[in-house]
Length: 399
Image (cartoon, rainbow, N blue to C red):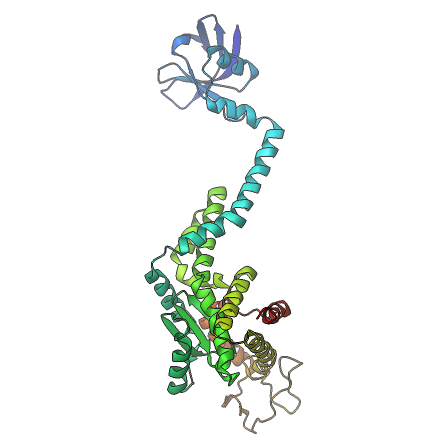
């Protein structure tokens, strides 16, 4: 005889009654609240186990018995020969060794898929994307960037000549020039269809072959679909994390804001190396030394080191407190001396406001363009490192 303890529900009300189910032979007797009910075992159905939760036992009626999990119940199920896959899973869940192994296996698979599978999947998907998708991404991103950028001050003749010079050696659909005071000398790729050069970069050198080297680097990012691959990798990671955590809200926001997530195109070291390799190969094919790329990187690095301090000296972060001993907000930057007696800054050509007023005005400006500036910084594809320049210079020896 098998005795099961649990709760009986009559199917009429939600009230449960403490009860027992006695199983003997091919008959079972349910006893609750001083009453008893005969149950035919041939009509008995036992729900699969789920951890230590009570298991529902029915007999083709509206009423049922919720039996507490026990070894007797497991033996009864086994004697019926009605074990399901879920019963097997439930037994595995009770073994700590299996739980630890499954957890480690899941983590290893997740990280392995993220590190190796997601990039491969993103790469394969990027190369089959219609070019119109890349064009829309570039257009949308440029609209956001233009909140932080200004129209190019380069002459029309200079822009036309550079476009012809660059595009005749490797085409993209759009080549833009923009004035970017905060980004300084730089260039970045928006998608496989669009590249942006800043005025600062063009003005940094009179050697167009150095600019061509930068263009080839950006063209490498475009041809190898680095922007698209970065976005797809981000989305794929979000999907994987959603499958694990069940939080789909973050994925929805990411997909809806895809044009705004191009900040993910801050390229990995591997992608930078791929773009450098592309530029080196193109330069060699034209008989141009890869040292042109290394030299322009030196110039960019030097210009950024200088421009950051200069920007601090003339930016909204200046301490405009009046008086001959007024200091810059950055103690390492000298305060501009050419300020007239009325409190006007000759560099900015505007009134030196009270610090509190200046702070409020600056806060409003920063909030208006905060996203665009962050996106601009993330899209900057030139992390200047001695390792990169050493790699480029080493390529010269192979010529």
